[in-house]
Length: 139
Image (cartoon, rainbow, N blue to C red; front, side, top):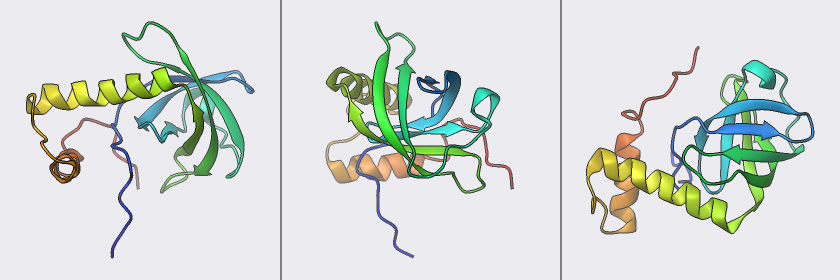
């Protein structure tokens, strides 16, 4: 089966997020400049309906400030285990922070200069998906 490749790399990493409207805090399971997936745990036990707008505050480790993003709930994950959010409005500085964060992580894992072309980049991201530490889905 052929599936559409994401436009941007997605790093499996927990970034602290706060839902502004519902005043609840959680953690991303993964993040990219296009969106994130928030795990269904802690204050995020109730899933927002698909199509719901959401405003989040992203709190990156080692970032000098927090970032506000607006998005829409696109899915609830494979096993209703969280909410997949597509960012619709994101601060340019937040995009740079996310891109640098992902690149720094991959540079640390693979060494600098690991990808010379976009195709090499995607091949390496695909190869590493199973090697990057993250919580496994429960069946």
